[in-house]
Image (cartoon, rainbow, N blue to C red; front, top):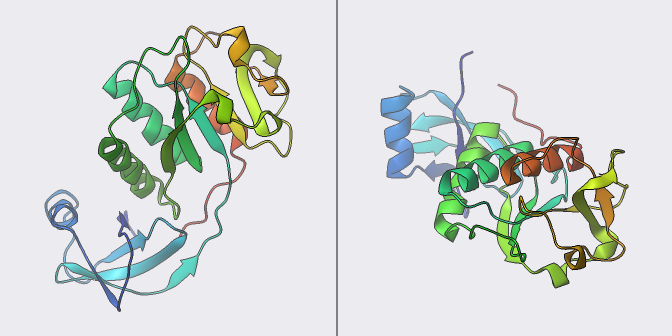
Length: 220
């Protein structure tokens, strides 16, 4: 079977069919050339994933599976300076399965967090692309709110060994690095390699280091 589209259809799901947005209908019909009766998979972004059929602008619900969240990994990032780099960062880390992506401001941060609606649209695109069951949570935080006992900090002088077990939050600073006083005492330091990385590249490397499992997908 060829490519099966995967759709984010937000709850609530009141009955046996799910209404498609106009954007979903246009994309399925004009871009993917999908018609009545063809198979799609879908998710509520909260762990429920299913397979159904297209039916007059709706999806007829079929077999569904509740998928446990595969990781509680939280990525905390100083936002890069351009929209394209922000989008790349959100999409790729969400595709890789990060549970939460939080923006943080540091003394050397150059960019600003994206608008909430833009970031959510990018996260939805990543969810559909990766055929996932859980939407990445997006938000902001402050350095002083991070728990040092749960924190791993990306640092050129850090360890090149896998992150300590039990720590689920990884902080990636700006390209100028974190100021020494911004690294919380008690945080573990992790090297992402010998080269100097852009923020979005470091975020992807950090996500790969932290995320250990991928969400299951529906078989067709």
